[in-house]
Every structure is written in C-alpha cells, then in structure tokens.
Image (tube, rainbow over all chains, first blue to last red; front, top):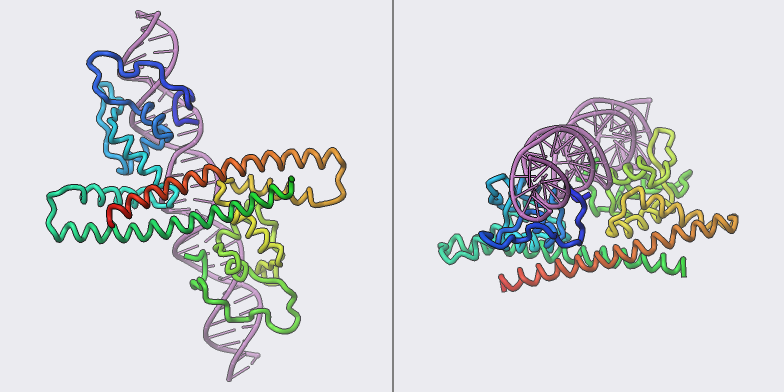
Length: 149
Length: 149
DNA sequence: ATCTGACCTAACGTGAGGGTAGGGTTCTCT
DNA sequence: AGAGAACCCTACCCTCACGTTAGGTCAGAT
C-alpha cells in the first residue's frame, strides 16, 4: 500500500531517527514520506521524472534528503489539485527558482517573468474550475443527505 | 481531442437535429456529449464498464439516448471530483436506484440504506479533503500572485 | 552475528480515458 | 436516386501517475 515496507502510516519512526553523533540533518526517504504525506513510490517517481532533483545517496545507496526536498514536495503537493502534469510542475518550479537568482540579464528575467505570468493565469483558471468541482460535489452531497435525512 | 469527429466544442450541432417526422426524443451520442460536457470516448467508456447502461441502437448501430442518460451522466459528473472509481459510482448509483423502487422488503431496504449511509460518510470525507486541496491550491496561487505582483 | 526494519531496483499492472485508422450510417439537397 | 457532409462505429494501441509485487541489500539494535 505504501509502495514498500510495512505500513507506517502515522506512527512516527522509531529507529535511528538522527542517531546521535555524526549525523547531519539528512533524512531518508521514509522520513520525507511521512512529513509530506506522499508515498515512497511517489517520491521516487518524482525523482525519476526530474520533478525532484536526484537525491544524494548514503554509502549503501539509500536516498538522503534535506529540508529543501521536503519544502519542494510540499509545494508540489499544493500544486497537484490544479491538474498540472509533472512536467509542467517541473518547469514552473524551475522558472521560479531561476527567477530567485539575482544574477540574470534583464532579458532573461523578463522572459522568465512572462512565462511565470502565463502559468499564473493558468493557475487562476484551474483554481476556478476546481471550485466549480467542489460546488458540484457539494450539490451531490446535499442530495445524498436529503435522501437519507 | 474530442474522441472522434471534427471538434464541435460549443457550436451547437446543425444537422438533423431532431428531424421533423418519426423522431422520438432519442438523441445520439454527440448530443449527449454536448449536453454533458463529456467526450464521446468517455461516454462510450462508461458504457463499457457498466457505469452507463447499454444504449439502444439505431438500425445502423448508432447509440441512442434519452433524457435519463443525460441526467445520469450529470450526476456522475458531479461525483467525479470526489475521487470515486467508476465502479464505486456504478454501485452507488445502483443502490440509490434500487431504493427508489417501492417494492422492497424491509430487510432489503434497510440494508440498502446502510450501504448508502456508508457511501454518504465517504462522500462527506472526500468533500472535506477536496476543500483542503482547494485551500492548498489557493495558498499556492496567492504565493504566485505575490511573486508577480 | 543476527535480526529486523528500512531501503533498493526492475518490471509489470491499473484506471480513466485520448488518439488514430479504417470504415459504415443518416440526413439534406439536388 | 445519388452525392456530400456530418455523424457515428469498432478495434487497438498510447499515456500518465503512480501501485504492486519480487527479490534482494543496508543500517542500527541486541
């Protein structure tokens, strides 16, 4: 159900949770999954398609993540209901990140801003249709309530 | 884009729109698609998986629908954002329909009501998580607006 | 050293349709 | 009656975002 391993669901992870010595602030994939509410499979998949950068690895090959990864995944999670493809999200995120850098020619910057603006109007549109869907669902729920009430 | 044929999109269908004689109130699939906003492909798929009952056919094999089909599809459309599988929807609709009949033993009726109640609580739950998603998306949109504003 | 829980890759499966090919049907108009 | 346009049919393969095994390896505790 979880993609792998026993289902931990909400139980906070007990073992080697940041041992004591030598640990940096690197988490492994299970911690990230827990903090984001995404499955291991999903996280790996996002890496596969480039939505998440390649994770560092432990000597034995375990993926290691820092806080930025969690933050990025949370952003992605917020975007998801807007019905973008993973590739669009990758692109949108990249545009935002590049804009964050101060070292950009005016041309580059304005072209990035343009792309971002395009995404924004898409976002607004999708947000509107999402709200419509909620209304629809609400209507259905009301009807159901009425039939049972 | 539409599953088949030239993209009509919003343009109302011009030809043989309920001819004049001999026609009953049967529509063909394109009319239904137009009225529900679903694609031809989707409608056929729903029939394939039993979410929509087998349509009648014209002598030449065209699917023919009545008003009930449109209504049913609109109900399905309202449900869709709630993230049910097509099979769950089929089942839920069937329960509702069976309940509508007056010829039911008390036992049957109460068992159906129970199932419906179970669905209802699922619906409420899904509705809640859907609203959460909207909030998330909203947060994201706000951020984007802020970056551009 | 061993156990156990957490993790790995590889690969196939699934749900809900989209897209295309190749061809038949139905109405309108002449 | 014939033609043309608009509409529809089945069959099949494709896509996207993962889920689900299968068959291992790794890391920390005992």
